Image (cartoon, rainbow over all chains, first blue to last red; front, top):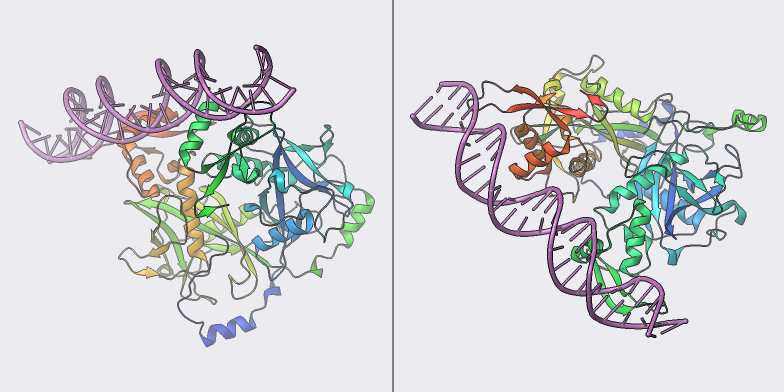
Length: 264
Length: 264
DNA sequence: TGAATAGTGTCTATAAGACAATATCCC
DNA sequence: GGGATATTGTCTTATAGACACTATTCA
Protein backbone atom coordinates (compact mmCIF):
# COMPACT_ATOMS: atom_id res chain seq x y z
CA UNK A 1 0.00 0.00 0.00
CA UNK A 2 2.56 2.53 1.04
CA UNK A 3 4.70 1.72 -1.94
CA UNK A 4 2.05 2.46 -4.53
CA UNK A 5 2.65 5.25 -6.95
CA UNK A 6 -0.06 7.44 -8.34
CA UNK A 7 -0.12 7.86 -12.10
CA UNK A 8 0.37 11.39 -13.24
CA UNK A 9 -1.09 12.10 -16.63
CA UNK A 10 0.96 15.14 -17.61
CA UNK A 11 4.29 16.78 -16.86
CA UNK A 12 4.34 19.90 -14.71
CA UNK A 13 4.13 23.21 -16.52
CA UNK A 14 7.13 25.57 -16.65
CA UNK A 15 5.23 27.94 -14.38
CA UNK A 16 4.66 25.21 -11.81
CA UNK A 17 8.30 24.18 -12.07
CA UNK A 18 9.34 27.72 -11.28
CA UNK A 19 6.99 27.79 -8.30
CA UNK A 20 8.56 24.60 -7.00
CA UNK A 21 12.08 25.92 -7.50
CA UNK A 22 11.27 29.00 -5.43
CA UNK A 23 9.33 27.19 -2.72
CA UNK A 24 10.74 27.89 0.73
CA UNK A 25 9.81 25.12 3.14
CA UNK A 26 11.42 26.89 6.08
CA UNK A 27 8.74 29.58 6.27
CA UNK A 28 6.77 27.50 8.75
CA UNK A 29 7.93 25.70 11.91
CA UNK A 30 8.30 21.98 11.32
CA UNK A 31 7.92 19.14 13.79
CA UNK A 32 10.30 16.23 14.05
CA UNK A 33 8.96 12.94 12.70
CA UNK A 34 10.02 9.58 14.10
CA UNK A 35 8.97 5.96 13.79
CA UNK A 36 8.61 3.52 16.69
CA UNK A 37 8.14 -0.20 16.27
CA UNK A 38 6.24 -2.46 18.65
CA UNK A 39 8.09 -5.70 17.93
CA UNK A 40 6.01 -8.53 19.31
CA UNK A 41 6.25 -12.26 19.68
CA UNK A 42 4.36 -14.88 21.63
CA UNK A 43 5.91 -17.47 23.87
CA UNK A 44 4.67 -19.66 26.69
CA UNK A 45 1.23 -18.15 26.55
CA UNK A 46 2.52 -14.61 26.90
CA UNK A 47 2.87 -11.71 24.51
CA UNK A 48 6.21 -10.01 24.66
CA UNK A 49 7.72 -6.87 23.16
CA UNK A 50 11.33 -5.87 22.68
CA UNK A 51 12.16 -2.89 24.88
CA UNK A 52 15.35 -0.85 25.01
CA UNK A 53 16.46 1.08 28.04
CA UNK A 54 17.14 4.67 27.13
CA UNK A 55 20.77 5.63 27.69
CA UNK A 56 20.24 9.31 26.96
CA UNK A 57 17.88 12.07 27.94
CA UNK A 58 14.96 12.51 27.84
CA UNK A 59 13.39 9.74 29.86
CA UNK A 60 16.84 8.24 30.51
CA UNK A 61 16.53 4.89 32.25
CA UNK A 62 13.01 4.32 31.04
CA UNK A 63 12.17 1.62 28.52
CA UNK A 64 11.22 2.42 24.97
CA UNK A 65 10.33 0.79 21.69
CA UNK A 66 12.98 0.54 18.99
CA UNK A 67 12.64 3.71 16.94
CA UNK A 68 14.45 6.32 14.92
CA UNK A 69 13.96 9.67 13.30
CA UNK A 70 12.78 9.58 9.69
CA UNK A 71 15.46 10.62 7.22
CA UNK A 72 14.63 13.04 4.43
CA UNK A 73 15.12 10.54 1.64
CA UNK A 74 13.44 7.47 3.09
CA UNK A 75 9.78 6.51 3.29
CA UNK A 76 8.06 5.80 6.59
CA UNK A 77 8.07 2.07 5.88
CA UNK A 78 11.78 2.22 5.14
CA UNK A 79 12.47 4.13 8.35
CA UNK A 80 10.56 1.53 10.35
CA UNK A 81 12.43 -1.32 8.66
CA UNK A 82 15.71 0.45 9.37
CA UNK A 83 14.83 0.88 13.05
CA UNK A 84 14.03 -2.81 13.20
CA UNK A 85 17.33 -3.78 11.59
CA UNK A 86 19.54 -1.39 13.54
CA UNK A 87 17.98 -1.91 16.94
CA UNK A 88 16.75 -5.48 16.79
CA UNK A 89 18.85 -7.05 14.03
CA UNK A 90 15.75 -8.19 12.18
CA UNK A 91 14.57 -7.82 8.61
CA UNK A 92 12.04 -9.44 6.34
CA UNK A 93 9.41 -9.89 9.02
CA UNK A 94 5.81 -8.70 9.15
CA UNK A 95 5.78 -4.92 9.61
CA UNK A 96 2.72 -2.71 9.32
CA UNK A 97 1.84 0.86 10.17
CA UNK A 98 -0.27 1.19 13.30
CA UNK A 99 -1.16 4.77 14.21
CA UNK A 100 0.45 8.18 14.37
CA UNK A 101 0.87 9.82 17.75
CA UNK A 102 1.17 13.56 17.75
CA UNK A 103 0.16 15.17 21.03
CA UNK A 104 2.15 18.41 21.23
CA UNK A 105 3.76 17.53 24.56
CA UNK A 106 4.41 13.83 24.08
CA UNK A 107 8.16 14.44 23.85
CA UNK A 108 9.70 17.09 26.13
CA UNK A 109 12.47 17.98 23.68
CA UNK A 110 10.40 19.48 20.93
CA UNK A 111 7.38 18.62 18.87
CA UNK A 112 7.95 14.99 17.87
CA UNK A 113 5.28 13.20 15.88
CA UNK A 114 5.85 9.46 15.79
CA UNK A 115 4.44 7.05 13.27
CA UNK A 116 4.02 3.83 15.21
CA UNK A 117 4.46 0.45 13.53
CA UNK A 118 4.04 -3.05 14.82
CA UNK A 119 6.07 -6.06 13.79
CA UNK A 120 5.70 -9.77 14.44
CA UNK A 121 8.50 -12.30 14.75
CA UNK A 122 8.34 -16.03 15.23
CA UNK A 123 10.25 -17.96 17.84
CA UNK A 124 12.61 -19.52 15.31
CA UNK A 125 13.86 -16.17 14.03
CA UNK A 126 13.77 -14.63 17.47
CA UNK A 127 17.05 -12.85 18.10
CA UNK A 128 18.76 -13.01 21.45
CA UNK A 129 17.76 -9.74 23.14
CA UNK A 130 21.42 -9.22 24.01
CA UNK A 131 22.48 -9.44 20.36
CA UNK A 132 21.03 -6.63 18.30
CA UNK A 133 22.06 -5.65 14.79
CA UNK A 134 25.58 -4.62 13.96
CA UNK A 135 24.82 -0.93 14.21
CA UNK A 136 23.43 -1.11 17.73
CA UNK A 137 25.57 0.43 20.40
CA UNK A 138 23.61 -0.16 23.59
CA UNK A 139 24.99 -2.76 26.01
CA UNK A 140 23.32 -6.14 26.30
CA UNK A 141 21.70 -5.41 29.63
CA UNK A 142 19.77 -2.47 28.20
CA UNK A 143 17.32 -4.54 26.16
CA UNK A 144 14.90 -7.30 26.95
CA UNK A 145 11.81 -9.09 25.80
CA UNK A 146 9.29 -7.70 28.24
CA UNK A 147 6.09 -9.50 29.13
CA UNK A 148 2.96 -7.54 28.24
CA UNK A 149 0.18 -7.35 30.81
CA UNK A 150 -3.07 -6.48 29.09
CA UNK A 151 -5.52 -5.13 31.67
CA UNK A 152 -8.56 -5.16 29.38
CA UNK A 153 -10.53 -7.75 27.50
CA UNK A 154 -11.50 -8.00 23.88
CA UNK A 155 -10.70 -4.93 21.85
CA UNK A 156 -11.54 -2.28 24.39
CA UNK A 157 -8.04 -0.91 24.20
CA UNK A 158 -5.99 1.34 26.42
CA UNK A 159 -2.39 1.54 27.60
CA UNK A 160 -0.71 -1.64 28.79
CA UNK A 161 2.12 -2.29 31.19
CA UNK A 162 5.33 -4.20 30.55
CA UNK A 163 7.25 -6.21 33.10
CA UNK A 164 10.31 -8.39 33.41
CA UNK A 165 10.04 -12.17 33.32
CA UNK A 166 10.18 -12.27 37.11
CA UNK A 167 7.51 -9.66 37.50
CA UNK A 168 9.36 -6.35 37.97
CA UNK A 169 7.40 -3.57 36.28
CA UNK A 170 9.26 -1.59 33.60
CA UNK A 171 8.67 2.13 33.38
CA UNK A 172 7.93 3.04 29.79
CA UNK A 173 9.19 6.17 28.06
CA UNK A 174 7.00 8.79 26.40
CA UNK A 175 3.59 7.39 25.40
CA UNK A 176 4.93 3.97 24.52
CA UNK A 177 2.42 2.30 26.81
CA UNK A 178 -0.28 3.66 24.52
CA UNK A 179 1.52 2.38 21.44
CA UNK A 180 1.87 -1.09 22.90
CA UNK A 181 -1.81 -1.05 23.88
CA UNK A 182 -2.86 -0.11 20.39
CA UNK A 183 -0.60 -2.77 18.89
CA UNK A 184 -2.25 -5.49 20.97
CA UNK A 185 -5.69 -4.09 20.15
CA UNK A 186 -4.89 -4.15 16.43
CA UNK A 187 -3.45 -7.63 16.70
CA UNK A 188 -6.60 -8.93 18.37
CA UNK A 189 -8.79 -7.25 15.81
CA UNK A 190 -6.89 -8.50 12.80
CA UNK A 191 -6.56 -12.05 14.02
CA UNK A 192 -10.24 -12.73 13.31
CA UNK A 193 -10.10 -12.00 9.61
CA UNK A 194 -6.46 -11.82 8.51
CA UNK A 195 -3.81 -14.57 8.37
CA UNK A 196 -1.67 -12.92 10.97
CA UNK A 197 -1.15 -15.67 13.54
CA UNK A 198 1.27 -17.43 11.20
CA UNK A 199 3.73 -14.56 11.51
CA UNK A 200 4.38 -15.63 15.08
CA UNK A 201 5.05 -19.27 14.20
CA UNK A 202 7.86 -21.10 12.40
CA UNK A 203 7.26 -22.34 8.86
CA UNK A 204 5.93 -25.70 10.08
CA UNK A 205 3.59 -25.88 13.03
CA UNK A 206 0.88 -27.99 14.56
CA UNK A 207 -2.74 -26.97 14.92
CA UNK A 208 -2.27 -26.92 18.67
CA UNK A 209 0.59 -24.41 18.35
CA UNK A 210 -1.56 -22.23 16.13
CA UNK A 211 -4.40 -22.38 18.60
CA UNK A 212 -2.04 -21.47 21.45
CA UNK A 213 -0.91 -18.42 19.51
CA UNK A 214 -4.49 -17.35 18.95
CA UNK A 215 -5.35 -17.81 22.61
CA UNK A 216 -2.27 -15.90 23.70
CA UNK A 217 -3.15 -12.97 21.48
CA UNK A 218 -6.83 -12.90 22.36
CA UNK A 219 -6.26 -13.58 26.04
CA UNK A 220 -9.05 -16.13 26.22
CA UNK A 221 -9.50 -19.85 25.50
CA UNK A 222 -10.80 -21.18 22.21
CA UNK A 223 -12.95 -24.16 21.32
CA UNK A 224 -10.56 -26.82 20.09
CA UNK A 225 -12.96 -28.56 17.74
CA UNK A 226 -14.29 -25.55 15.95
CA UNK A 227 -10.84 -24.00 15.80
CA UNK A 228 -9.59 -27.08 13.95
CA UNK A 229 -12.58 -27.14 11.65
CA UNK A 230 -12.53 -23.47 10.73
CA UNK A 231 -8.75 -23.47 10.22
CA UNK A 232 -8.82 -26.51 7.96
CA UNK A 233 -11.85 -25.16 6.11
CA UNK A 234 -10.22 -21.76 5.60
CA UNK A 235 -7.78 -23.17 3.06
CA UNK A 236 -5.01 -21.08 4.60
CA UNK A 237 -3.02 -24.03 5.86
CA UNK A 238 -1.74 -27.14 4.13
CA UNK A 239 -0.74 -30.43 5.70
CA UNK A 240 2.90 -31.27 5.04
CA UNK A 241 2.54 -35.00 5.63
CA UNK A 242 5.25 -34.79 8.28
CA UNK A 243 4.75 -35.01 12.01
CA UNK A 244 6.36 -33.68 15.11
CA UNK A 245 8.52 -36.12 17.07
CA UNK A 246 9.80 -36.72 20.59
CA UNK A 247 6.74 -35.26 22.23
CA UNK A 248 5.81 -37.99 24.69
CA UNK A 249 2.44 -38.56 23.09
CA UNK A 250 0.86 -39.04 19.71
CA UNK A 251 2.65 -36.63 17.36
CA UNK A 252 0.55 -34.06 15.55
CA UNK A 253 0.56 -33.37 11.83
CA UNK A 254 2.72 -30.44 10.80
CA UNK A 255 1.06 -27.80 8.66
CA UNK A 256 2.37 -24.84 6.76
CA UNK A 257 0.79 -21.54 5.83
CA UNK A 258 -0.44 -21.23 2.26
CA UNK A 259 -0.01 -17.67 1.09
CA UNK A 260 -2.48 -16.36 -1.43
CA UNK A 261 0.12 -16.17 -4.19
CA UNK A 262 2.25 -19.15 -3.29
CA UNK A 263 4.13 -20.76 -0.48
CA UNK A 264 6.50 -19.74 2.18
CA UNK B 1 -7.35 7.37 22.15
CA UNK B 2 -5.31 10.23 20.85
CA UNK B 3 -6.31 12.39 23.78
CA UNK B 4 -5.10 10.03 26.45
CA UNK B 5 -2.30 11.18 28.68
CA UNK B 6 0.35 8.92 30.11
CA UNK B 7 0.91 9.12 33.84
CA UNK B 8 4.41 10.16 34.79
CA UNK B 9 5.50 9.03 38.22
CA UNK B 10 8.27 11.54 38.95
CA UNK B 11 9.37 15.03 37.97
CA UNK B 12 12.35 15.42 35.66
CA UNK B 13 15.74 15.80 37.28
CA UNK B 14 17.64 19.11 37.12
CA UNK B 15 20.13 17.43 34.82
CA UNK B 16 17.39 16.33 32.44
CA UNK B 17 15.85 19.79 32.57
CA UNK B 18 19.16 21.31 31.54
CA UNK B 19 19.44 18.81 28.67
CA UNK B 20 16.00 19.85 27.49
CA UNK B 21 16.82 23.54 27.73
CA UNK B 22 19.87 23.05 25.54
CA UNK B 23 18.22 20.73 23.03
CA UNK B 24 18.54 22.04 19.50
CA UNK B 25 15.81 20.60 17.29
CA UNK B 26 17.17 22.30 14.18
CA UNK B 27 20.24 20.05 13.97
CA UNK B 28 18.36 17.67 11.71
CA UNK B 29 16.25 18.38 8.62
CA UNK B 30 12.54 18.21 9.38
CA UNK B 31 9.68 17.30 7.10
CA UNK B 32 6.44 19.21 6.89
CA UNK B 33 3.45 17.50 8.47
CA UNK B 34 -0.08 17.98 7.21
CA UNK B 35 -3.49 16.44 7.76
CA UNK B 36 -5.98 15.57 5.02
CA UNK B 37 -9.58 14.59 5.65
CA UNK B 38 -11.64 12.25 3.49
CA UNK B 39 -15.08 13.64 4.29
CA UNK B 40 -17.63 11.11 3.16
CA UNK B 41 -21.37 10.79 2.99
CA UNK B 42 -23.78 8.43 1.26
CA UNK B 43 -26.68 9.49 -0.90
CA UNK B 44 -28.79 7.80 -3.54
CA UNK B 45 -26.78 4.63 -3.32
CA UNK B 46 -23.48 6.38 -3.91
CA UNK B 47 -20.56 7.27 -1.71
CA UNK B 48 -19.36 10.83 -2.11
CA UNK B 49 -16.43 12.83 -0.85
CA UNK B 50 -15.94 16.55 -0.60
CA UNK B 51 -13.21 17.70 -2.98
CA UNK B 52 -11.68 21.14 -3.37
CA UNK B 53 -10.07 22.33 -6.54
CA UNK B 54 -6.57 23.57 -5.85
CA UNK B 55 -6.19 27.25 -6.64
CA UNK B 56 -2.43 27.31 -6.08
CA UNK B 57 0.59 25.32 -7.10
CA UNK B 58 1.48 22.52 -6.87
CA UNK B 59 -1.14 20.46 -8.68
CA UNK B 60 -3.16 23.61 -9.40
CA UNK B 61 -6.50 22.72 -10.92
CA UNK B 62 -6.49 19.22 -9.54
CA UNK B 63 -8.93 18.16 -6.85
CA UNK B 64 -7.83 17.52 -3.30
CA UNK B 65 -9.17 16.59 0.10
CA UNK B 66 -9.67 19.34 2.68
CA UNK B 67 -6.42 19.55 4.57
CA UNK B 68 -3.99 21.83 6.36
CA UNK B 69 -0.53 21.91 7.82
CA UNK B 70 -0.28 20.92 11.47
CA UNK B 71 0.47 23.85 13.76
CA UNK B 72 3.13 23.55 16.44
CA UNK B 73 0.71 23.80 19.35
CA UNK B 74 -2.15 21.63 18.15
CA UNK B 75 -2.59 17.88 18.18
CA UNK B 76 -3.17 15.90 14.99
CA UNK B 77 -6.83 15.41 15.90
CA UNK B 78 -7.21 19.14 16.45
CA UNK B 79 -5.58 19.91 13.12
CA UNK B 80 -7.95 17.53 11.34
CA UNK B 81 -10.97 19.07 13.10
CA UNK B 82 -9.74 22.52 12.14
CA UNK B 83 -9.34 21.54 8.50
CA UNK B 84 -12.88 20.19 8.58
CA UNK B 85 -14.24 23.39 10.07
CA UNK B 86 -12.31 25.81 7.91
CA UNK B 87 -12.74 24.02 4.62
CA UNK B 88 -16.10 22.31 5.03
CA UNK B 89 -17.82 24.29 7.77
CA UNK B 90 -18.41 21.16 9.81
CA UNK B 91 -17.71 20.26 13.41
CA UNK B 92 -18.83 17.64 15.88
CA UNK B 93 -19.00 14.84 13.34
CA UNK B 94 -17.30 11.44 13.31
CA UNK B 95 -13.58 11.93 12.66
CA UNK B 96 -10.93 9.25 12.97
CA UNK B 97 -7.31 8.85 11.98
CA UNK B 98 -6.83 6.64 8.95
CA UNK B 99 -3.20 6.23 7.89
CA UNK B 100 -0.07 8.30 7.47
CA UNK B 101 1.33 8.77 3.98
CA UNK B 102 4.99 9.62 3.78
CA UNK B 103 6.57 8.66 0.46
CA UNK B 104 9.47 11.07 -0.01
CA UNK B 105 8.20 12.37 -3.37
CA UNK B 106 4.46 12.49 -2.71
CA UNK B 107 4.53 16.30 -2.69
CA UNK B 108 6.83 18.06 -5.19
CA UNK B 109 7.40 21.10 -2.93
CA UNK B 110 9.32 19.40 -0.17
CA UNK B 111 9.02 16.41 2.08
CA UNK B 112 5.39 16.50 3.26
CA UNK B 113 4.11 13.72 5.46
CA UNK B 114 0.35 13.74 5.73
CA UNK B 115 -1.72 12.13 8.45
CA UNK B 116 -4.93 11.17 6.70
CA UNK B 117 -8.27 11.17 8.53
CA UNK B 118 -11.73 10.19 7.45
CA UNK B 119 -14.96 11.84 8.54
CA UNK B 120 -18.60 10.90 8.11
CA UNK B 121 -21.51 13.29 7.81
CA UNK B 122 -25.21 12.55 7.55
CA UNK B 123 -27.51 14.03 4.96
CA UNK B 124 -29.28 16.27 7.47
CA UNK B 125 -26.09 18.05 8.50
CA UNK B 126 -24.72 17.99 5.00
CA UNK B 127 -23.47 21.46 4.10
CA UNK B 128 -24.02 22.95 0.69
CA UNK B 129 -20.72 22.33 -1.12
CA UNK B 130 -20.79 25.96 -2.16
CA UNK B 131 -21.01 27.18 1.42
CA UNK B 132 -17.91 26.26 3.37
CA UNK B 133 -16.95 27.61 6.77
CA UNK B 134 -16.38 31.28 7.38
CA UNK B 135 -12.62 31.01 6.97
CA UNK B 136 -12.80 29.43 3.54
CA UNK B 137 -11.67 31.57 0.70
CA UNK B 138 -12.15 29.40 -2.36
CA UNK B 139 -15.03 30.27 -4.68
CA UNK B 140 -18.15 28.12 -4.73
CA UNK B 141 -17.32 26.47 -8.03
CA UNK B 142 -14.06 25.09 -6.67
CA UNK B 143 -15.66 22.49 -4.40
CA UNK B 144 -18.05 19.65 -4.92
CA UNK B 145 -19.35 16.41 -3.55
CA UNK B 146 -17.71 14.00 -5.93
CA UNK B 147 -19.06 10.52 -6.58
CA UNK B 148 -16.62 7.77 -5.64
CA UNK B 149 -16.14 4.91 -8.08
CA UNK B 150 -14.73 1.91 -6.27
CA UNK B 151 -13.15 -0.46 -8.80
CA UNK B 152 -12.63 -3.33 -6.35
CA UNK B 153 -14.82 -5.56 -4.27
CA UNK B 154 -14.75 -6.36 -0.59
CA UNK B 155 -11.76 -5.02 1.26
CA UNK B 156 -9.13 -5.60 -1.39
CA UNK B 157 -8.27 -1.92 -1.44
CA UNK B 158 -6.45 0.30 -3.88
CA UNK B 159 -6.83 3.81 -5.24
CA UNK B 160 -10.27 4.94 -6.34
CA UNK B 161 -11.44 7.52 -8.82
CA UNK B 162 -13.77 10.46 -8.24
CA UNK B 163 -16.16 11.94 -10.78
CA UNK B 164 -18.78 14.60 -11.10
CA UNK B 165 -22.46 13.81 -10.80
CA UNK B 166 -22.76 13.73 -14.59
CA UNK B 167 -19.80 11.43 -15.01
CA UNK B 168 -16.83 13.71 -15.71
CA UNK B 169 -13.71 12.27 -14.09
CA UNK B 170 -11.90 14.53 -11.61
CA UNK B 171 -8.13 14.49 -11.56
CA UNK B 172 -6.97 14.10 -7.99
CA UNK B 173 -3.99 15.89 -6.50
CA UNK B 174 -0.99 14.18 -4.87
CA UNK B 175 -1.83 10.67 -3.63
CA UNK B 176 -5.37 11.56 -2.63
CA UNK B 177 -6.74 8.72 -4.74
CA UNK B 178 -4.90 6.38 -2.38
CA UNK B 179 -6.29 8.14 0.67
CA UNK B 180 -9.84 7.89 -0.62
CA UNK B 181 -9.32 4.22 -1.42
CA UNK B 182 -8.05 3.51 2.06
CA UNK B 183 -10.96 5.45 3.59
CA UNK B 184 -13.48 3.30 1.73
CA UNK B 185 -11.57 0.16 2.65
CA UNK B 186 -11.58 1.14 6.32
CA UNK B 187 -15.24 2.04 6.17
CA UNK B 188 -16.14 -1.35 4.73
CA UNK B 189 -14.04 -3.13 7.30
CA UNK B 190 -15.43 -1.27 10.28
CA UNK B 191 -19.04 -1.52 9.24
CA UNK B 192 -19.16 -5.20 10.15
CA UNK B 193 -18.28 -4.76 13.79
CA UNK B 194 -18.58 -1.08 14.71
CA UNK B 195 -21.68 1.14 14.87
CA UNK B 196 -20.47 3.35 12.08
CA UNK B 197 -23.37 3.34 9.64
CA UNK B 198 -25.36 5.61 11.95
CA UNK B 199 -22.91 8.43 11.39
CA UNK B 200 -24.21 8.72 7.85
CA UNK B 201 -27.88 8.91 8.89
CA UNK B 202 -30.01 11.53 10.65
CA UNK B 203 -31.00 10.94 14.27
CA UNK B 204 -34.17 9.07 13.31
CA UNK B 205 -34.15 6.59 10.48
CA UNK B 206 -35.91 3.52 9.17
CA UNK B 207 -34.39 0.08 8.92
CA UNK B 208 -34.57 0.37 5.15
CA UNK B 209 -32.51 3.56 5.23
CA UNK B 210 -29.94 1.86 7.43
CA UNK B 211 -29.78 -1.10 5.08
CA UNK B 212 -29.36 1.21 2.10
CA UNK B 213 -26.41 2.85 3.82
CA UNK B 214 -24.81 -0.50 4.49
CA UNK B 215 -25.31 -1.60 0.90
CA UNK B 216 -23.91 1.65 -0.42
CA UNK B 217 -20.79 1.31 1.68
CA UNK B 218 -20.22 -2.36 0.97
CA UNK B 219 -21.12 -2.09 -2.68
CA UNK B 220 -23.25 -5.23 -2.60
CA UNK B 221 -26.83 -6.16 -1.69
CA UNK B 222 -27.81 -7.47 1.71
CA UNK B 223 -30.41 -9.96 2.83
CA UNK B 224 -33.31 -7.89 4.10
CA UNK B 225 -34.61 -10.37 6.66
CA UNK B 226 -31.36 -11.18 8.34
CA UNK B 227 -30.30 -7.55 8.25
CA UNK B 228 -33.46 -6.63 10.18
CA UNK B 229 -32.98 -9.45 12.65
CA UNK B 230 -29.33 -8.87 13.35
CA UNK B 231 -29.82 -5.11 13.71
CA UNK B 232 -32.73 -5.49 16.12
CA UNK B 233 -30.87 -8.20 18.04
CA UNK B 234 -27.73 -6.08 18.30
CA UNK B 235 -29.35 -3.75 20.81
CA UNK B 236 -27.76 -0.80 19.04
CA UNK B 237 -31.03 0.69 17.84
CA UNK B 238 -34.22 1.60 19.68
CA UNK B 239 -37.70 2.03 18.25
CA UNK B 240 -39.00 5.54 18.78
CA UNK B 241 -42.70 4.63 18.42
CA UNK B 242 -42.97 7.17 15.63
CA UNK B 243 -43.30 6.45 11.96
CA UNK B 244 -42.36 8.09 8.73
CA UNK B 245 -45.17 9.77 6.82
CA UNK B 246 -46.14 10.78 3.30
CA UNK B 247 -44.37 7.89 1.70
CA UNK B 248 -47.10 6.47 -0.53
CA UNK B 249 -47.08 3.12 1.23
CA UNK B 250 -47.15 1.67 4.69
CA UNK B 251 -44.87 3.88 6.80
CA UNK B 252 -41.93 2.27 8.55
CA UNK B 253 -41.08 2.58 12.21
CA UNK B 254 -38.43 5.19 12.99
CA UNK B 255 -35.48 4.03 15.06
CA UNK B 256 -32.67 5.87 16.73
CA UNK B 257 -29.15 4.83 17.58
CA UNK B 258 -28.48 3.85 21.18
CA UNK B 259 -24.97 4.83 22.13
CA UNK B 260 -23.18 2.71 24.69
CA UNK B 261 -23.23 5.47 27.30
CA UNK B 262 -26.50 7.13 26.47
CA UNK B 263 -28.54 8.58 23.64
CA UNK B 264 -28.03 10.91 20.83
C1' DT C 1 0.29 -51.19 29.61
C1' DG C 2 -0.62 -46.39 30.78
C1' DA C 3 -0.27 -41.41 30.14
C1' DA C 4 -1.04 -37.88 27.12
C1' DT C 5 -2.51 -35.56 23.27
C1' DA C 6 -4.13 -36.01 18.17
C1' DG C 7 -7.85 -36.64 15.35
C1' DT C 8 -12.93 -38.19 14.07
C1' DG C 9 -17.98 -38.46 14.39
C1' DT C 10 -22.29 -36.88 16.07
C1' DC C 11 -25.64 -34.06 18.35
C1' DT C 12 -27.39 -29.46 19.49
C1' DA C 13 -27.84 -24.41 19.59
C1' DT C 14 -27.51 -20.33 17.03
C1' DA C 15 -27.48 -17.29 13.09
C1' DA C 16 -28.26 -16.43 8.15
C1' DG C 17 -30.80 -17.00 3.73
C1' DA C 18 -35.20 -17.92 1.44
C1' DC C 19 -39.90 -17.36 1.04
C1' DA C 20 -44.74 -16.90 2.14
C1' DA C 21 -48.37 -14.41 4.49
C1' DT C 22 -50.27 -10.51 6.67
C1' DA C 23 -50.44 -5.37 8.00
C1' DT C 24 -50.79 -0.56 7.04
C1' DC C 25 -50.40 3.48 4.79
C1' DC C 26 -51.45 6.76 0.53
C1' DC C 27 -53.82 7.36 -3.68
C1' DG D 1 -59.95 -1.09 -3.62
C1' DG D 2 -55.15 -1.08 -5.55
C1' DG D 3 -50.29 -0.22 -5.17
C1' DA D 4 -46.44 -0.36 -2.43
C1' DT D 5 -43.63 -1.41 1.27
C1' DA D 6 -43.40 -2.86 6.37
C1' DT D 7 -43.53 -6.53 9.48
C1' DT D 8 -44.11 -11.24 11.09
C1' DG D 9 -43.63 -16.26 10.89
C1' DT D 10 -41.73 -20.54 9.24
C1' DC D 11 -38.57 -23.55 6.94
C1' DT D 12 -33.90 -24.64 5.45
C1' DT D 13 -28.97 -24.41 5.63
C1' DA D 14 -24.40 -23.31 7.47
C1' DT D 15 -21.53 -22.85 11.40
C1' DA D 16 -19.95 -23.03 16.29
C1' DG D 17 -19.88 -25.32 20.74
C1' DA D 18 -20.09 -29.62 23.34
C1' DC D 19 -18.95 -34.19 24.04
C1' DA D 20 -17.89 -38.98 23.27
C1' DC D 21 -14.84 -42.04 21.12
C1' DT D 22 -10.77 -43.87 18.64
C1' DA D 23 -5.70 -43.45 17.26
C1' DT D 24 -0.86 -43.10 18.04
C1' DT D 25 3.26 -42.10 20.18
C1' DC D 26 6.66 -42.42 24.25
C1' DA D 27 7.91 -44.02 28.84
